[in-house]
Image 1 (cartoon, protein in one colour):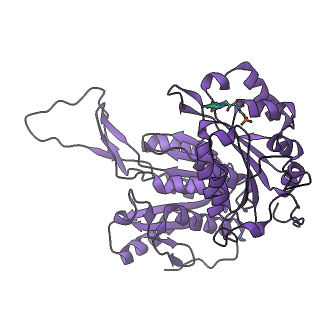
Image 2 (cartoon, rainbow, N blue to C red; image 1 turned 90 degrees about the horizontal axis):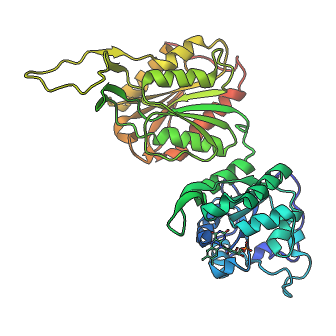
Image 3 (cartoon, rainbow, N blue to C red; image 1 turned 30 degrees about the horizontal axis):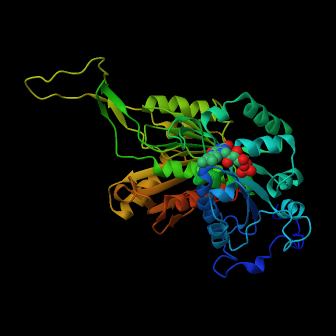
Length: 440
Ligand SMILES: Cc1cc2nc3c(=O)[nH]c(=O)nc-3n(C[C@H](O)[C@H](O)[C@H](O)COP(=O)(O)O)c2cc1C
């Protein structure tokens, strides 16, 4: 969308000049994007303000449209304050003039309706046009994201199902959620609105023009857990945050993402296909399944999981009893998944990224990573110290590649994820002969 010439801003949609200086002109992943945010009458409407804030922070210009019912739940001043744009709610507002719904539709790169009530769904499915939002959707040529929020019985009603099927069948709207969980009444079921962060991710994925779009990126995350008996196991301190950050950013940048995760306490990022595993052997099976036996199913494999090097030689089916003396555990080696894939790879695909978490000095960590790069036949090793990475939201890492090392400053894991994905992208685009491999 950003490539097309911008039409002059329509007369009836409030001009950008009404923005406050702090809100206009932010640089971000959505800078230059115009997003219409429709808000309909649900208790969940207050969460639309959080989404508006995320979008503005990311550089988007946001135009909010409230339905009459939405005004019972949230105030226009909140949205005007966040977006810097007066809120639209009346098609016949004397101050606007012109066809506000037509102009809004043609001026938006994306229309998102959060929350979307059952009634709004029915109106959109029928093609009604009695309010600004419904009429704008009828005119829309840009992508439309609907974020339903309603009582589970409303969501599962045949009438709502028909409306969703109609909208999906028309190919004019994508749905984000609803999810399963507690709704406003305190009851539980499917109907709970997707959280603002998930909707933000969906918007990024929808508007992404990143060269990663359409690529299949396989990411492993978290620890592996090796059972000794039904109550004891051998594992490590990985929380999965780095792998989940990679999966989240890759999906937001338009990639198809398979996330193979050991046991962690993290929600699945929006748009990511998640495969849960427990042991290293199970992770190996899931990785081969995702990349395909001839490695042709993936463009990149990022092995971020802390795969246990060893597992108990024997797993007991009942709890081991305490004896009179000490106990020696025999451990056997786990498969080295990234080495297996590295050894099987003939050409340049998939791009292989390994992680090296160590407890040595920074110099030793980088030196060890160089060794790992060669030994495991991978393209990049992300080297970091356990104290800087496990469980933290930030990380301090060095990207060790075939040509040189790139020491990065401490940064949030989401940002580091972007740096790694940028490297992967450059590698995907580079020709086979353009690099001088490291020697020595
Ligand atoms: C307290 C309260 C909460 C409501 N929450 C929802 C809701 O979550 N989802 C929904 O579909 N309708 C909900 N409704 C009903 C809608 O507000 C009502 O259908 C309204 O006409 C929707 O108008 P709109 O789609 O134009 O915003 C709620 C109503 C009330 C009074």
